[in-house]
Length: 500
Image (cartoon, rainbow, N blue to C red; front, side):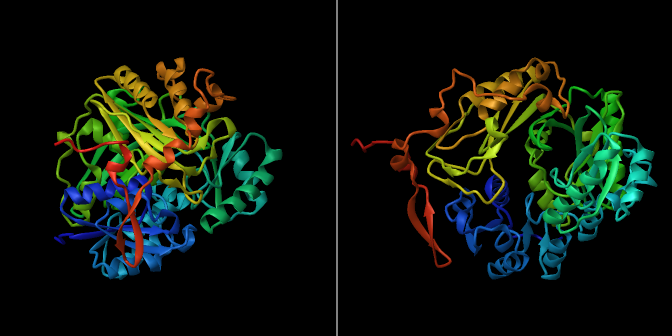
């Protein structure tokens, strides 16, 4: 077994902080990388060692494979953890890490490559008896062939990027006359996002739920699933609220989906933490969607109901250890909900809202967890995904968790920029959410033309400049030849003095 002593975290924001905390609890030295835009970021302040990797643009910093591996070597790291996003699902990066003599904390490059191509993975899983959405098993067809496939499948159809994810290169087509323009638009977007314009067509499942199963696989042929997460509340194909257990699943269906997820993992020889995603239709049928070959944004709710640390387990598996528990040891306890806190304006089609955060007050109390990448005085850059933090709550049942989340959101103060906090509160209060009718069409069906409630003053989002002076970080440690700023907690609490 290869004992890991130092890990470079090839990411930023809340997930980098989450990983760094896990590493410290394991006694492993964390190394953070940062761009010009992140010199004062929270993950930089938390890490034991830091390394500058370039300008703000991702291609010149967080997506620069050579710079990241050079940084790992410079600091004597044993391994690299990619987090999610950026290079996390890039098989060339995983292979480059291994070729450099380092441990990649994630699945094998060939597994990432296979599962990253939606068409190839569909072909592989057909023979394993995994239920698939009716659709194509090939890409690169002529327009006439695409049209014939669409007619065979039956409208409406979904066009998807073969190398895609996150809603990129995705189009819904309801009639033949819209197909050609939709394919061309999807190909352009896929080429821009992934460098691969390949698209395929599958049947569009109307009004489904998005349900995923958390899996773990190790190098010894052991596999477990840690039950489901429902991720149906989405805007622009991006999740914003997740919960577990799902209100839609019976115990029999939960077991069936878990066993199917493990079959997927065994078929591809999966090693590490991953997520098998399914669409669940109104008739109780489920269809394989894709596998995310990384730790998921929403992993904390699984941790809350199973009392297992997925990041630590991921690191242990990378060291060559077997999974530390058996399937029969796992149980779901209570109910957990996660809300993603974004710097965005829901009134303006979720337009990003970068800028300086003047003041942050986080909620606290029993059953409340926050995975965050922000603090008072930090600048939210415009170059990256606008996620600020994740608010996670646990309750003995769904209603307790829902009420706890609403109260926690009400007590989550972020001044200086706009966030989606009031929007999330209104979703959680909606009668259809309360009833558990959470489908992927929830937001267009129930939240269209949403406006900020009249009883919430706009100042709560924009803040006042008065907070600026009292919450700014102060210069501190110098690392790697660059000024590193550290937050002085004594300067954020207002006037104080020592009384003898």
